[in-house]
Length: 192
Image 1 (cartoon, rainbow, N blue to C red):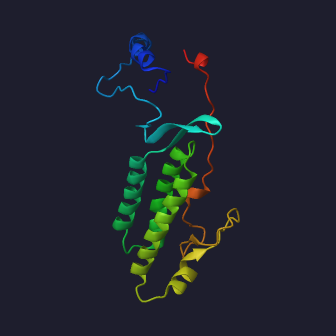
Image 2 (image 1 turned 90 degrees about the vertical axis):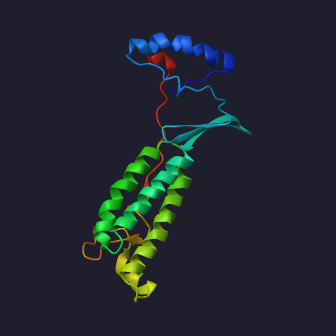
Image 3 (image 1 turned 120 degrees about the horizontal axis):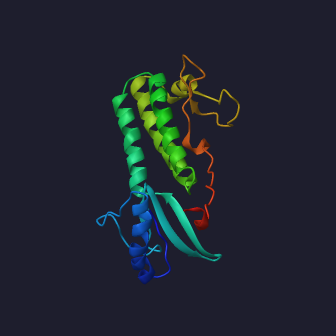
C-alpha cells in the first residue's frame, strides 16, 4: 500500500485514518514494513522504483523496474544458461521464452523500454557464448547462418532471431517486442 501526502505530518496522521479502513477488510499495517519517505528520494515497492522528478514541464512521477528487480531477472537468465550449457537451442528457447515474457509483461506498464533493450543485449551476449560452446570449431558466420533467421510470422523486421534449426517456428522472444501499455488510473473516489 502506498499513500501519498503533501507533508510529513499528514503522512503520520494517515496511520490513525487507515487503521479502521484496513481492519474492515481484514488487513493490518506491519509496523516493521511501514515507512514514511520523501518521494523525491525514491523508494522500491513490489519490484519497482518510484521517484518524483522536477522537470521543465512540472513534477513527474516515474515508476521503473528497481535495480534489485533487474538484477534478479539477470540472475534468473544467467542460471538458465548455466543449467542448459551444451544443450540444444530448442531447449534453451523453450525455457527462456516464458521467463522473458513473464518478466516483460510484469514490467510493461511502467517506464521499462530502455531496460527491455538492456535485457535483450544481456541475452545476446549469453547466446553468443552458448553457441560457441555448442560449436567450438565453427566460425560465427556458420553459427549465425545456422541459428539466426528473420521472424517467421513477418511481424518483426528483426533478421537476427535465434531459431531452432530443426523447428523453424521455434524462435527466441525478445523483451523489447513487448509494448509499454500504461495502466488506467482509478480515481480515489472509486475505492470504497
